[in-house]
Length: 269
Image 1 (spheres, rainbow, N blue to C red):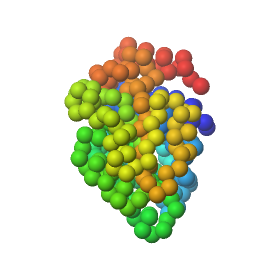
Image 2: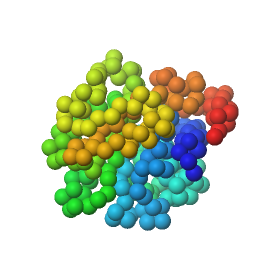
Image 3: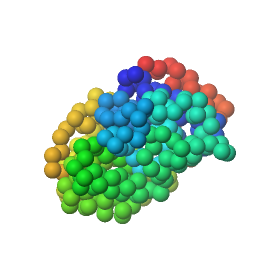
Image 4: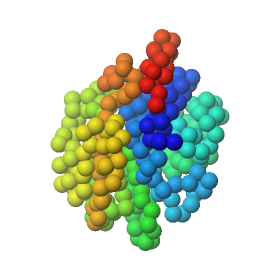
């Protein structure tokens, strides 16, 4: 499966799961779909048949509210049956609203409290470095999440210990729960902030473009932790959800669901 096909499946599954469960955060899942698709098809050293292998790369979804996107990837990659997705956010399901590792192969750690996942990922990278392990640790954070002070404490620590086995991807879709990031708590200039903390920084102009993402992941950062700032579109792939704050919490029902599925089917790879 190539990354474009996987990204489409992430979007389709995510819309279906949020629709069936009356859950939230579809906009955040759609903006991250392309990042996850490239990561899981072309970057991460992982094996669904051996999800706990010691030499596997680690991925932590720090913006854990977008867990539907990760569940979709893991199901399509063979970590667990695709039929599990229909149980999302239902009583008794392993697939909780915010992503959980309990009984879910391929999920490294439960996340949801913003600013915590990336810190735990940093700890994983520190542990690997101190034990001379060769695997890499990746984490995906939101730009709204970067309002959390713990993100910048992590940035200092990763730089101090020269964690060049650690990559942070910022899903910079420009929005958070209650508005535009720059209206609530400006983070610009984002790239120079990370650079000032001692990171190797690559900014991706179109973070939903797979070729641009591939090039960013391929850049070496010897001696420094790496930050990829991916400028994405919240709600990407469904016209009426794109850059529309309503779809942070709203779930697609009725004509909205039908239109979303119609648009996705029209652009299937």
